[in-house]
Length: 229
Ligand code: ADP
Ligand code: MG
Figure 1 (spheres, rainbow, N blue to C red):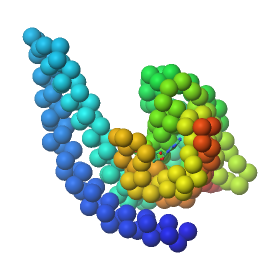
Figure 2 (figure 1 turned 60 degrees about the vertical axis):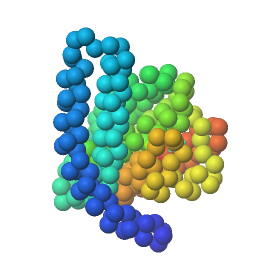
Figure 3 (figure 1 turned 90 degrees about the horizontal axis):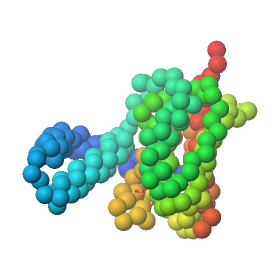
């Protein structure tokens, strides 16, 4: 517990700086992407030229994604918290990842209770869900199942589960995940779960992970429900 807090504090100093750099870089990148798109519309391009431009745009988008993760590490503003319809945010997040799943022959099953309300920031909770669903897809690689459920608990919390039948993790891996920059992927940043942990903790919740090698992984997110009254 103590160690976790130190890690987060250190991260905050680094992340504030990273976030401001990331913010500055976004504008020129958007402009480069715009020109690339214009170039793609040129007639008389060879097949190769088309391919090179497409790859450039994809790589720019990937860089943008990494930058967004750094930006998310900057301390969230709790005073901007609002009431969120969590049920629809979960549906939206699944929709966002749907084509990525289909592309990899992965089936998503969902059972989401309606009318779940929490206090927080919509874009941030959506980012948490997208990060975890994306990891689940990448853990399966191709052909598999993801189960997503959300239900009220009796203790005033909601429990969101995201379960996959992917590669799973060893105990050693499980202990390391969530530490900044820890990734087993060739093009991974190892920031996704660091961001998730920070956002959920800020909203008064936690994330539990169960995993078994070659069997799969289950992420459970607990968040306090909005108090009635
Ligand atoms: P990245 O996805 O960029 O590697 P993350 O912080 O999102 O960074 O994840 C860190 C690491 O945790 C991953 O590289 C992977 O090894 C492991 N991991 C996360 N989710 C899963 C999962 N559902 N199944 C197996 N391993 C996972
Ligand atoms: Mg990830």
